[in-house]
Image (cartoon, rainbow, N blue to C red; front, top):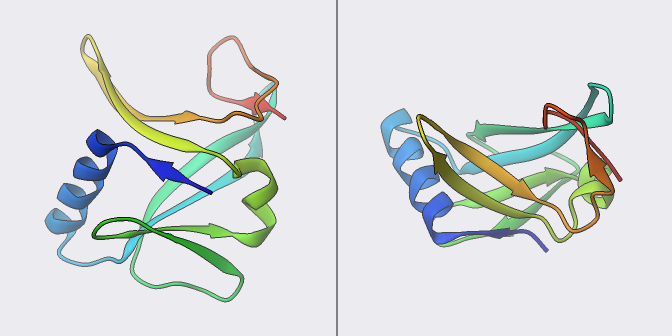
Amino acid sequence: MITVTSIASKKIKDNLAKRGSGIGIRVGVRTTGCSGLAYVLEYVDESWKGSVAFPQSGFGVLIDQKDLPYLDGLEIDYVRQGLNEGFEFNNPIEKDRCGCGESFRV
């Protein structure tokens, strides 16, 4: 199960409208950093073989089946802190994050 907060949902819908196309976002992980994994978020125009869709109101969150064990239970939020803003991933299975916060370990 993947959830998206109302603030993140609005931001995603706004970005899809600005793009002029798209069915939603792809969320995944890639190997990087000192803790091993990093989150990836990109806008997508279509689903692909092996993707799992989590329908939201007005868009979908698509995840590659191979990434699902790392993302099950994930909450996607959008936060503003001072001059910085962006998507934040709240993952209940994270064991820890690196010092800079760019990578994580499960």
